[in-house]
Structures are given as C-alpha cells and as structure tokens.
Image (cartoon, rainbow, N blue to C red; front, side):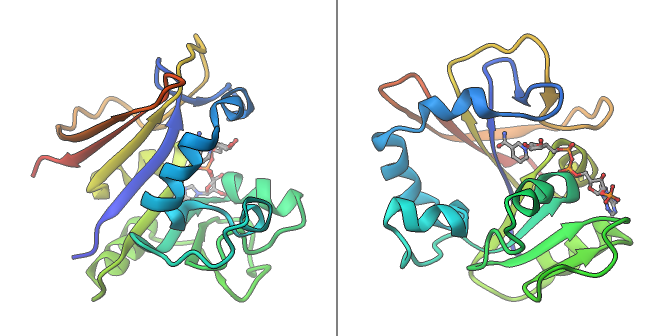
Length: 194
Ligand SMILES: NC(=O)c1ccc[n+]([C@@H]2O[C@H](COP(=O)([O-])OP(=O)(O)OC[C@H]3O[C@@H](n4cnc5c(N)ncnc54)[C@H](OP(=O)(O)O)[C@@H]3O)[C@@H](O)[C@H]2O)c1
C-alpha cells in the first residue's frame, strides 16, 4: 500500500490559514534554512512555478509521485494562470463543479473521492501520495491518511481554517520525528496508529 501523507502548514493553534484559508502571514518564515530542508527532504512539494525562482528546476521526486488537492486549493494556481501547479507529480483535483480538466496532467475526481484515493493507495510504487489540502478535502479523507507532516509556524491566529474540516473524529497518531528551526518553525511527523 502506498502512503497518503497530509503535508500542511499551520499556526500554533492548528489553523491552516485565516477563515478564508489565506496563509500569507506564514510566508515570512520561509527562510533559507527552511527551504534547504524542503529541497532535501520534501522536494516534491515545491510547486512547478516556484522552482525556477528557487533555482531548483531539476529536483527529483523523493517521497511522492501523486498529489491530491481540493478545488478551492487548486483555484489559487488557476488564478495565477497555472493549470498544472505540480507538473512533476500526477495531479488529482476533487471537484464536482469543474467538469473538464483544464490541463492534461490534472485528473478531476468528481465522484467517490474516498474510493478513488483507496485505488491510488493500492497501486504498486515506491513513492507515496501528497495530500495538499485544503481543509474540506482533508476532513473527508481523514480515515485514509497514513502520515501527517505538520509544519507549525510560530504564530497564533485565534481563529481560522482548521486542518480538518470534519466533525469530531478522535484519531490516534504516533510521533515519529520533530525538527526545529532557528526561526521557531517546527516540523512534526506522525504515523497513524493502526
Ligand atoms: N496552510 C497550508 O499548507 C494550505 C495547504 C493547502 C490549502 N490551504 C488553503 O486551504 C484553502 C482551501 O481549503 P478549503 O477547505 O476551502 O477547500 P479545498 O478542500 O481545497 O476544496 C474544497 C472543494 O473540493 C471539492 N470537493 C470536496 N469534497 C469533494 C468530494 N467528495 N468529491 C468531489 N469534490 C469534492 C469541492 O469542489 P467543487 O466546489 O468544485 O465541487 C469543494 O468545494 C485555500 O485558501 C488554501 O490557501 C492551505
């Protein structure tokens, strides 16, 4: 089975952005130390359009070969005129409204999201599946998540968009690692306790 990993940026109080999902207050913590970590440990999570400016166009995938996003998250790329924001991965976008995919590399999942994700997890392969978010899709896929990689930024938002837009769902995870950064950011990795 391939792993489904929810790799997500959040505040100390567990919000992935403000109430509309805007996470731009976190961008100021993306410094050289953090980018070096992402480039070496999670290169696959760097969007295609950020690779040129970062000078890392040729990075090989290390952990993931597939990405899943909700339509609202994908919209952020579409608004920039980018139809394939993760061209180095197989891209899936959950949407009941988009209809036809705007890009040959992007497959729309309109029906049975959980079933399609189970099929993807059951495929053979060394690399896993990057669940990008947002909150709604992560909430619907919570039962399928095998690993959490939570980038916690040293800010409290007070209110905002939760990591999971689901109801109460007590789910146990085991802490695998913690990496701390000079600027107060930390990255915790958890595996689902099965
Ligand atoms: N902090 C971070 O690391 C991070 C990461 C990712 C995203 N975000 C933020 O998250 C925000 C978006 O999150 P969100 O929770 O509002 O939305 P989302 O999860 O990105 O997308 C929700 C949309 O996905 C589609 N969808 C959901 N369940 C579905 C199902 N079962 N079958 C088919 N389609 C389904 C629907 O699209 P249709 O309406 O088209 O049917 C729904 O409106 C953005 O503002 C983004 O900035 C933050």
